[in-house]
Picture 1 (cartoon, helix red, strand yellow):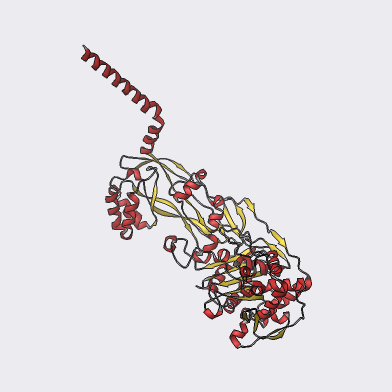
Picture 2: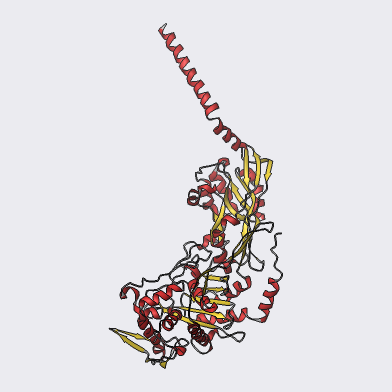
Length: 583
């Protein structure tokens, strides 16, 4: 009797457990298993996130989406990942191991489609389709690729896109990113990603137990993002890139009347279509030297020294200082650059000869009269030591020492006065400096995006020129400075920038990487504006290794091309016939 009672209770308890389990599975866990069931037979296959186009100032396309074939897979549907990787290895021998690693990896959501290989050819897509029965869960899909017509020539401006990383997925949870999504990773693509990025489309399909597509249930049309219209001119961009060649360095061009960046080139660059091959490259192809390179300005800083000297009364226009080629300060003997070359000095000269011939002794002496604090004060007035605010990610601010810093930290007024002290600047800051001189004192915020327009042509946002600050310099000082800058190119250290088409005003700058006794390479820079009397273009050429003569030569070649009648006529024609092609 007790045995029967025991078994009766056991059956009751088991029945209760069974009922509770049924309740848990069918009621409590119903949403979960319903979703799993649906995911198992119905899939949404996105065709990618469309992006808006990027145009130059005349309506020429610098970036756009184009259709392509992608090789994709759904982890849940893979039957034998190792075998399938082996089969794929026959068609893509170089990527067999890569495929094996990807296909055997564990995924948090096995129902998501993952891109195995982007941009496969039509022939490769056909081969995959022919072998689809042996590749369950792996298929080809029409996707979106990003096309960059200028390739390396505009890579640091336009940037590139790439798949969102796991870190980015976690950092930007509110954006709903998932593996496989493509976002802007560099340059304008990154800076304006929220505007350029569109709404993805895709297909809702029914699949069988092997993961093969059986029926299209619905289609969601993608919506492209907004377009960017830049201040960049494609013709100028190509000219600057051509003349910089393969030299490490950068070229930036700006309209000094409004801050619009007309061209920005940094070398070495990268091909936006082949990003992976540049990872770990010691030449730093992803370093935008125009806004991230931090260099001593060398003699370009003498522009600041001259202004400070004349404005504070430390020097008058016709005051003369003797340059014997060297000067003794305490235990240190300083040389003028001409002494190192010719073993002599410039003799007795005033500021009208000192700037064109870039005399270190003259400006070093003036610098000691001005003092460290005043030199740094005037450098700050022109925006050195702070970012310019250009609309590109990652801008650096260089280094400007404190006015109260001790002598050993600043390098002293003599060194600062010739741009060799504890001071670093970025090329974009030097461009801002020469532009401020060119326009008479306005510090414009440099910018690259002119406006953002919707796919149907409506203006979403338009960017206007912005004056950050105005430097008030006496007309007498400005006149003396501009005369000197013009003479730099006419008969001074910048004659290699001289062209027949227009008058050019500029300043050379060579900065040593170490003491002259070490015989290390030098940085070479040249800043200028043209035409001298009515500037429409300001330009900086800065070389990682090279002389200011070489930088000025490159600038001269660029300006000669730009001011040629043919180029000017073409640009006028394009400006009058702008059309943003949406086909």
